Image 1: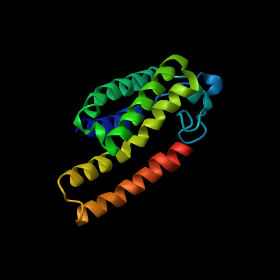
Image 2: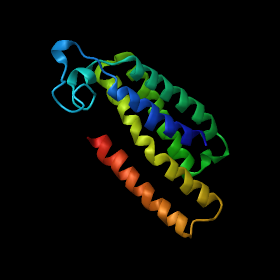
Image 3: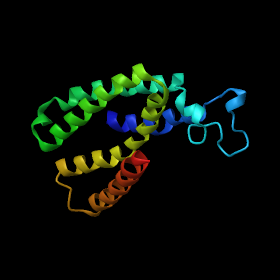
Image 4: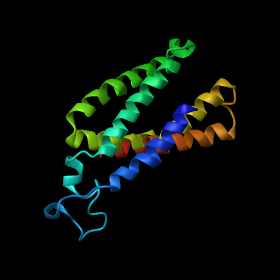
Length: 159
């Protein structure tokens, strides 16, 4: 359940910071749509803001919090080991983000949008645990998971 709450924070609260950039007059791009955002302004990308640091700290805290559930009885499954490796890599990857700043901090927080596929992964796991993996809901969920995973973790992360 906490990972679904994490998705809401990562995909709706943290993106607020993507649009909160106030570059100096020489670097402003008021002549184009979204010119002073991380999407269109290099100054906004290369200068980490407080919201980026808070986002990285939030993510590190969430990974540590969620790690305690992964280290439980489900660890000895294939899913458990994969999640353990994912959380260790995410946690260790966040530490340099907090110390380097600049481009890495901004892009790390931007990449948290990839978590949008997590609710579909959780639903798949819940349906499997309850032996409900033969129905229409499971198949529809699989399609949504595939699409969000492909777009958000494949295309968006690669970009």
